[in-house]
Length: 487
Image (cartoon, rainbow, N blue to C red; front, side, top):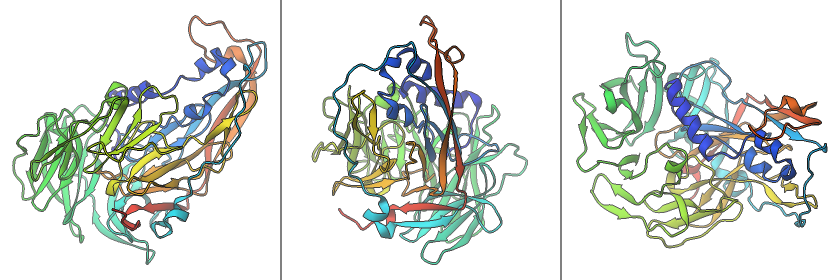
């Protein structure tokens, strides 16, 4: 749930996403003989580099926008545009012969069928027109929401009762006096308090502050401020007497709710907060090599106990909670997923589920995966997609149950969002009324960028632009706190 920090930091985020992304359109044109051979992977290049995202999927290069993307500004929350150019049958090479595969269906049912009690509808906006941004579940029937007066400008916290269909204001989220360019960042729900932090992301100041309000509601209180490296907040948590957070460079700190100086929690060098009291030895963010790094320990900061992660050979990007881990197999074109317990037991590779970056873990030990939708190839080597397949899935590792998230457009596009809490969220959501519309036109191949040193394409290509239209009335929400316990 992170707002814009700075252009430099945003550039680092996009660079990290690019490190993990497939080749751009230019490479596709230069190797047109592959045509749409890996179209789906390009399509689902959702840059899940920021917390609380809406992944917008479509066309040849997908764009994912953070719900609290990385700073303040105006714009459409549930919108993105993608463009791709696909070569037609011209003077360039055509697809080689490929053995056709028998098409099948993705065997993952929608969440509304798997966990009907966990799926509900909420309005996109409050009665006064402020737009809601889901954060996480507070109970099986209560959702924590941020109401924004304008894009990424948080103004208040509300609790939406899905049983009654009503919303209650929890607290206003004030701007500190005398602070310009202030934006609220991550929100975290604790047992007794709800906490959040803010910063001035569009200037060079290294400064942040922390706020709390009783979970029952009331007046928000500024706990304190930090500067320097301590202001590079990664995740936050809140206990009965302190705000806790991890810094981007490692180390976990606390500050008393009554006010006072921050102090480092002993023994937390190199650790990163996951969800209080749990910490890990891998950072929250990171693309490229950092994303492929395996987690090796899970630490309970209350007891000091550390569990070593049994990392199997051939696995990368393994991320673990207190019980379950999620990663992927190395050197697998389809990003085959790996699920296991921290000690390495109960290892499995669920079909049709892939990890392509972003948050792997959700609340209550659930995993979060992408679904490519590819079910085979035709005689020309073209990918065949299941147009009814969900875009993503929540996976219950205890039972092996997968529940589909989001609705795929006929073109293969679509969008979904994850709740914007600091800890792994219990909320996923999407706009059923939203559609991606693709418009195509013929253009000269010479007008499309191509890799340096490669021959200039000739003939005509089809240039397509995908835009998001419709929706904006209600969100379909999956609240994992309403899923019956299985372990």
